[in-house]
Structures are given as C-alpha cells and as structure tokens.
Length: 177
Image 1 (cartoon, rainbow, N blue to C red):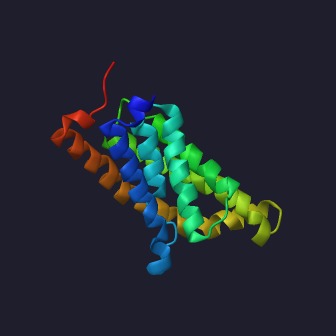
Image 2: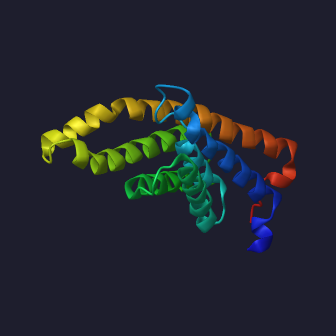
Image 3: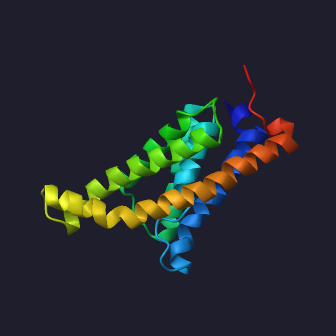
C-alpha cells in the first residue's frame, strides 16, 4: 500500500486534487460565483482515477476538510455526504473514462449533491412542508447551474490535463492487471 501511495501516479493525482481544492476560495475574491469551484470535478476525478477505493474517498475528503479549516467553514455533514456521492459517481465510470461518461457522471453528481444539500438546508430558511422543499430547490437552481458549469470546465482541465500528462509521462498511466 505504501509503495502504491508513493507512486508517481498517486502523487500527481493527489497534487491535482489539492490544487483543485484551492478553488473553493474563489468566491471570497470574485463576487457572484458561489458553487463555481473545482470541488465537484475533483470528486468525480478522484473516483474515476484512484484504483484504491479508500484513497478515492479519503484524498478528496481530506482536501475538503483542510480547505474548510482555512475558509472557516465548519464540518457540514450533508455537504460531505453529497461529496461522497460525487466520488461514487466517478467510480461508476472507472475503466470507461471518455468525454461522454465524464459529462454524465459530473451532471449526475452535481444533481445528487444539489438534491442532498438543498433538502438538508431547507430547514433553517424555509417552511417545513412540501412547499418549503420546492422553494428550497427553486432557490438553489443558480447554485446547481454554477456547479454544472464549473464541473464541465474543471473536469475538462483535470481529466484532459491528466490524460495529456499520462501521454507525456507513461509512468503515470494506470497499471492494467
């Protein structure tokens, strides 16, 4: 396990994920782009690229936790559950990573994240009935839009960039058993 974690592939993947996690600070510096970060894309990317399932979940969750501590965001269970589901969406496309599967996995992950977090966050702000649930989802649509657009852009950068790195440095390619 230690040899695998210290391999060039895992070190590069982890570096890309940590770099992508830094985009969570963008809304602090650029107004009106809430949910426009690489978080969703990095979750799908990690799920698709890490052979080891534990690392596929652990590395992006640790990146989230570290960025949360720097941003002053506390631990928020629904956000982390949504994030875990997005990693699982990436795992669903392992071995068949292509532009179509990446796009479908990314949109599915964003929609699941949206459904989980908006349902959980309706309680402090909306009535606790079906109307409140619907209102919560309607009010969250701009955040879903931003996440889908960000996932498309950052997903292209992560998956495309790593694809090019694998081509330039074959040592980074996944070992096929």
